[in-house]
Image 1 (cartoon, rainbow, N blue to C red):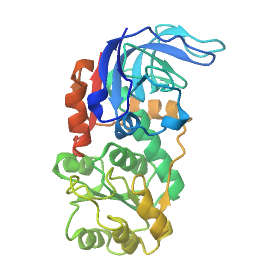
Image 2 (image 1 turned 90 degrees about the horizontal axis):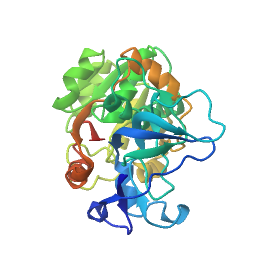
Image 3 (image 1 turned 180 degrees about the vertical axis):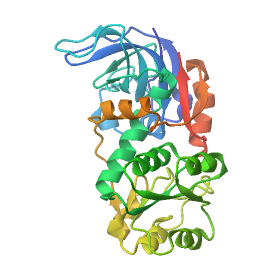
Image 4 (image 1 turned 120 degrees about the vertical axis):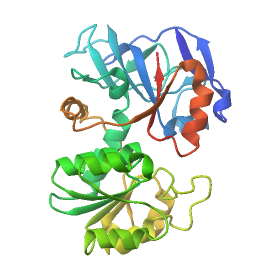
Length: 316
């Protein structure tokens, strides 16, 4: 099968499209013929050597989230059949991962009718991170939540989950996603200079909780520049009045200094719920562009720019 693979750490330049054996599912795993594989910032961290001490030796693949057609079942697998359409996380402990013609999956959910493989493969990491962040933040129905970086995939998923739960939302976003966020019920303002004043005016008082969903530690206006000390977190603390009422999904160093919450424990127990919400049109993650496996360098360049404009997808 064709798969993206790297046998040394470094920039995305080390990634190559190769012909390799298809993986075989182990106990509790399924294998799919991949139709779509979502790209995330985590891919470039792994290529750069993150988790190198915790994974088997090189070579290795990339691609953490996939959708496709089940074509092999491991031992003790139930509730799914060959030919089913599924989505979820791909295993990444072997020489290949999701960016391949076939991928192994340790967890999955059925793709709802009316949802494409492309749309389904965009869901797992963004939806899981947003779901977990709202739970860890403890935001309750009726409260006012500020989602900073709501134009990111995690940010928009968080807005959609929050509104569905009866939480009022103010969102900061750029022009690309502002209209879509307003359409689903969020009050939207721009980030950058004067953001705190604009949010305060929209809130007509204090914000109850704040989620920093910007992938660059808050500096989404200039992703090419280092974040100032604390990034946006001091502003979010000021708006909520309590660092314990703020959570970031990316700026962990500043969070440790400022007493802001973080969330890191990934779990895919809610995949069936994500599938249900996607089937009902409540949960969507916007796909900005699609690529072939052979266009990985082009996709990596846009992804690492900090302004992909939505989910980037490899299509097979």
